[in-house]
Length: 306
Image 1: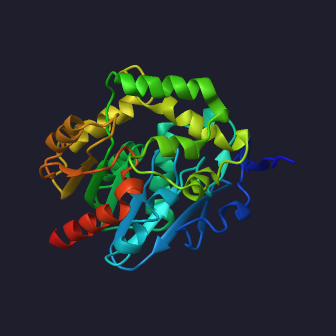
Image 2: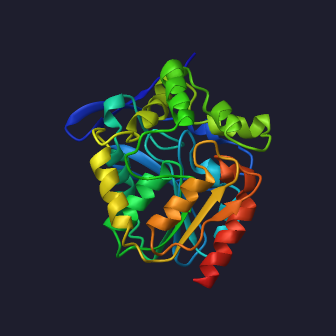
């Protein structure tokens, strides 16, 4: 029998959300972290927290969740307090069923609230990849009193015409909709071979079509023109980054079909605080999966030097 969505009421407006059963997360490889939760307007947001010291916020992308950072959390928790949340619609967090709930502003607002109100984080290093970029870079420019450093991986910000690879991905997502199998998409986005157990870990949060509303919505939120609903906020973030002079590590992989070496160069040129872009070899779009331990070590070394 399929799992049924759980009705959750947000504020004064009735809205249903799916809550993935806890047993789906038992025994996942490399994922033995204690779950923690905060509530926002009736929705439960999940995060994990490890280590002590200055906080390090790890923001995931599409169609992943905090599981993507499982290889990095142990090393980074040796040098700081690691916080890895799941966006609403992903991981152990609640998943609104209505596609209209999802927007760039809604995702950003929930992370800002987690950082500022629920956890009161400051002295932050924000580590971003894929959709973590638009969300985490916005946090940096809108909450500069809280963010001290940025580590930017395989992402972009702004409103530009997309490349052919992105258009193929968007068309694919529109075609398959809630029939998407997130773990298989992650497998295709890696340079290294993933075991079936790891692929199942990426699938764990999404056992039903209803649970995948956020996964399906994300590609539609990318600003591909100035007229896109996400464009004004994304363009504003990009412009503010032109004066971001705090330490920034730009670390892109060598085999990402969406974000190339040229994208890394443009990101480093945009942000005054960035040094020359660095490369992770033998990695594709999901570089945390391909080279997670190496990346964590490089970020830890960079933190020690800054």
